[in-house]
Length: 250
Ligand code: URA
Image 1 (tube, rainbow, N blue to C red):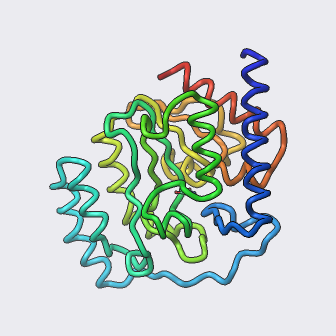
Image 2: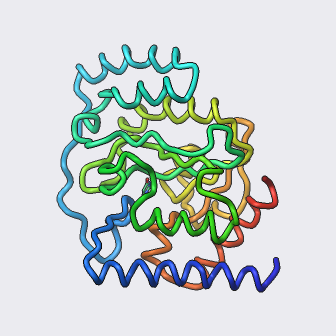
């Protein structure tokens, strides 16, 4: 790996994190979806249960999902979705955005409060860092890639997604991937990597190498929110190594 580029990448992540910290001190109210752990204790979790009625709606909606024959139709199904209780709690569903023919797809965990408000993925603090990694680090435009999440609705208080929520939401993601047909998927963080790869292995163990996901190369790497919380040169180096491998592939 070229050391200058690696150092540039580290500096870039450094300066974005510095910037985000300064803005936070000034009171800018960014909230990360995956940042509820760490030093700040998570607020009480709002219970989310799957009712019988949810399961019934889920059957109805599943046929709509399979009938959707393009991304727009799929987005309409997501916008109407009430398959689990998150559908009743959200302000906006966050379908994902980007190039419908992208060679590279980033998949995160779930929308946070900023994303819920704006109906767009990765637009909070973690999103700013992801955007910088894509644009300044990888030299791509955000609109060249496709950015989505495992869950399309925000879990209350940014708690971890529940298994039943994943079961409800996964068909949307599978269809998105089927339509977009990316060459490479970058799974951001433990949650996305474990859900897609159906593994219990932690991100520290599995990051940095390609896995086969339904015939697509999948690279797990650290979630930008994790980088914000675990601010070390080593972690930034790891992410650089991972995105470098992705760039070599696309
Ligand atoms: N974190 C995620 O995993 N997804 C988002 O869209 C925003 C933050």
